[in-house]
Length: 118
Image 1 (cartoon, rainbow, N blue to C red):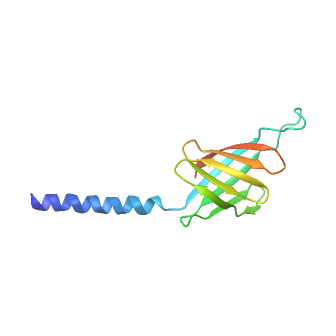
Image 2: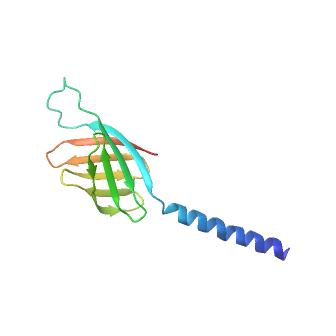
Image 3: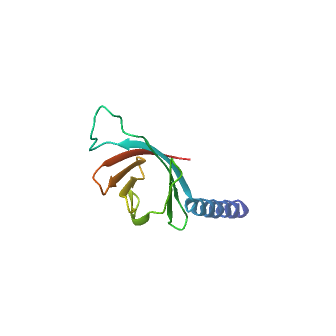
């Protein structure tokens, strides 16, 4: 009985260590969407926006646009609900629970993207 209890406790500790270290791993997302506000000509469909986003285990954020442009946003806030970041072109807000990413461009438009873990 004592050996079984010891084995169960050891297994629980090992499982906890695996889950804890796995939670800090790099997270990758594929995000797709478009501008949803301030479309100058409704007859012209807005260009789709594709982003590949990586949140590193050291809390560094990197983004690659669909045309290969690399961005290194500065994280301004990150909690259980929302990740906020900024670049020279826009401010971004990603919602962890829904996978929604909003880009608020300094020139005025608002873009909404849906993100999936890859």
